[in-house]
Image 1 (cartoon, rainbow, N blue to C red):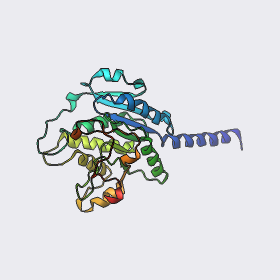
Image 2: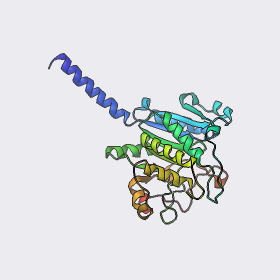
Image 3: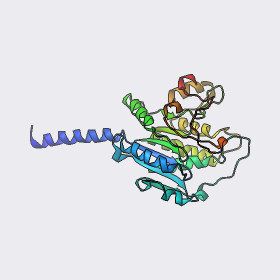
Image 4: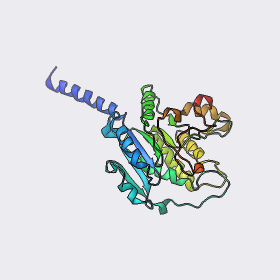
Amino acid sequence: MDYWTNWKIKFFKDLKVRFEALEKSLSIIIQGPLHERMRESVPIYLDIINNSKCSSAGNLVISHWNNDKKNILDGIPRAKEATIIENSIEEVRVPEMHDNSRGPNPWVYQNYTTLKGLERATGWFAIKVRSDEIYPNLNIFHERLLELAEEEIFHKTITSDIFFRVDSQEKFHPSDHIIAGKKEKLKRAFALSTSICRSLKPGQFKFPEQIICHAILKSMNIEPKPYKSKKIMQENFEIIPLSRMTDAVWTCSERKYNKLQASMAGWCSDIRRI
């Protein structure tokens, strides 16, 4: 075998290894208003990315608002290692809805900051988290995505069980506190969910999680039909429960955004039991 044939074989072998590594890379998107808890979460998430497969291809993205308290950002360790996006609140503001639905209205804010974060994410996979929560072992979501990839399963979305509802209670109601999946798929989904939020009509959806779920499914050309909701959810979602997330801190508007660590009754923690 001559020199150039050997060189080409080696080149393409190396190229294959690089592409395979790239397809394991991870981006984490922290979305929402700048929060003091980011002082703890940002270094944790940077370490998770740096310790992941093909760390050089992934990144941490902070997607926040231009009316946030900037001094919080100044006090976040290693913040300069992250990609920081300052979104204009004026650009996305839509009228408030008053239709007795739960959750903070308008719902476009979460979807918009997540979308803008995904647009700047460089990893093959992405995990979206809230700025006021901390998940020290968020890497278990990435590990599960890699396991699914080994089986050539790329369509599934993985969430936590925080407010994930069983089918008999609310259809198409996953958790929106942690959302993990293939980046390009999530980017299409949040582009659609942001568009839905901008033109939302009172009573169209009861919960913001249902908007995200519908958008994820429709972006994959899956119609969220109520009569087959269980099957659709089981085929396209997985759940990693809070009980597996050591020292996690979560919060919600109902508890006035106080620090919470325990699970609540009524959550669906196993997609097989939805």
